[in-house]
Length: 141
Image (cartoon, rainbow, N blue to C red):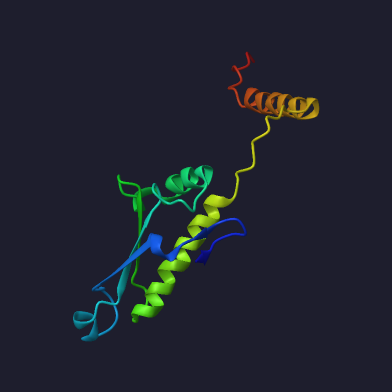
């Protein structure tokens, strides 16, 4: 079990990991050993996630989510399979933790009377400044 929050835990059987060849650092080793990890987590079929968390996770995942509802995380930052595997799992846990946080509801506010007066006063001052910039008609001397 992978513990996400106090209430949410994911069974390791719900996660599929596939090792693929990575680009980047590693010298000749990079051509021979599949060190990058492609982690797949079926968000749509997961029994571990509450519905509200599932919806937020789908929204947060963006392009990492397939049309079938599978979240794909690729980790290729490190040179070893084990570190990439742990990195992918950490990123999955972090993403689910973000989705588990309920967004704070927005409260509508009205501008105060003082702020309305300040705004109008500023507009009046700006108007006065621009009026002073107008061309003065030539005097008849």
